[in-house]
Length: 255
Image: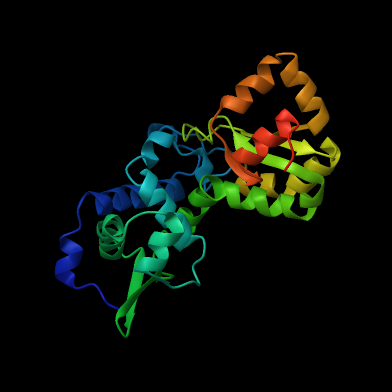
């Protein structure tokens, strides 16, 4: 059975629930004044329900690093039920670090839970009033990696290395930030552009791919190419391959 929240627990919500109230206030304001939203630091004249236009500072209280990963796992897979150890392993964090976060999300009624034997399972609350908005925000930020990876999967045999770099990899992206994508392999820019078209529409962001062959990358690195040298040293979110593969491919070394 669902573990329901009592009236007392609702009244005891802390700062996270105050953030939820603020989000709901913005949502109500947008609904009533869809062409006059500049007081909230974003512009919604084109699409009053386009949450990708919300100023990124507004998201800081909800999207701490751990909470961002936790919400992405739970809300972007709303049908899946997770138990604590499974979540901890999936996110590569300790169970103790998740406990407080899960309790907060339960109190805010963003999650529901139920017990089966000794295990407590957590899942997105489908009755949460702002679930669609939260899913939209997560899809446009945290969910980007999964979506781009899925889009490139059919082309994986032609790709040696693919990763996101730039502001997204550094967790410093703004709501207006493009996604910088690096692809190395036996594939052309046109194929990559076609594969990414639907993702760009879904996340409402431009994806800027740099597509290069392994041989060309090696030549440019040997000649001291500034761009490739910088990208090689930058933070990366790997979609295909890993850091060790990158070193081998760009140095010309093979197993």
